[in-house]
Image 1 (cartoon, one colour):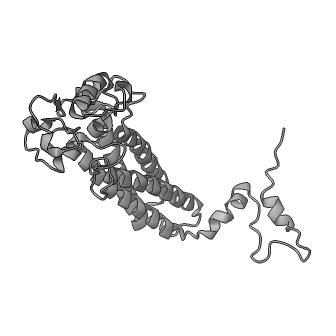
Image 2 (image 1 turned 180 degrees about the vertical axis):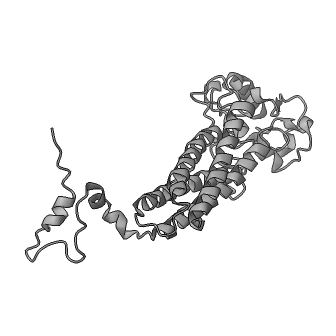
Amino acid sequence: MLNGCSLTVLILGVLSSLSMVCLQIYILVVDYPLNIFSESSIQLNWSGTLSTIEIGVGTAVLLLCTVTAIPYLGVLNIKNKTPIKFATIYFAIMALASVIISMYRLSETGIISDNGICKRVEGDLVCPTVLFRSEMKIENKEDCVFNAFANSASVWNRAGVPKIDWSDKDMYDKKSQQTVYDAYKAAREDVEITADEMTLYHDCWYWGCDEVCNDRHTININMAFASAIVSVIYIVLAVLSGVQSEFDYKEVVELPSVILGDPIPNQGSSSDSKGTPSESKIKSWNFNLRM
């Protein structure tokens, strides 16, 4: 008979991790390369960086579930559950990493937070299209051409003021910093910064903060939801693995003794009547280093 728990871990783990790995590789290799701007060292693609991390996490989960699930598919009464207990710990670590990534994506795209880069209208970096949409509408590519640097929204489309086409990815590049600065300077009476100090808006492009002006919008939303779904599955894998191994969190404390092959100290006080640590406790941490 098949071991249902191991079979479930294998199916869920392989399908979820392999799907995520293939999705992220396709995105980075085919559709959206990691670096597209002239100075990648200062114009970091955090969305793409998260994708590379997810490839690593997905690969680890794929290997883990195959190595720890396949050997037990036909075993109902597992005697040595140590490998499964180790797998539970690693599944939990992978799940935690995936949760952090998914929350980052959901926050930056503005799905769960008003402070994400694609939602906020105040702060150090405010995307021009996000600010413009707070007062105006963007319905087509023509609406992506504006100057929202003025303090009053009534003059964002004023004739005679240089405008920026925010549907053009080159405008988010470092090489166009002077062009953006000139538009900024023309829209304001007092300018206290130089062209080199002008904000770079590459994050707005990489996160696809506008559904009309940025062609990365849909893929970032899809990746955010995909990361959230996979995070839930990884948590389920950790729970299933923990149930199968009868995992006890107290065993984590005793793990060094298990690794070193020393007997686990008896329950109770770890010191004698004089307050001196017991011999077994000292021995469990004695790595017996040899030169």
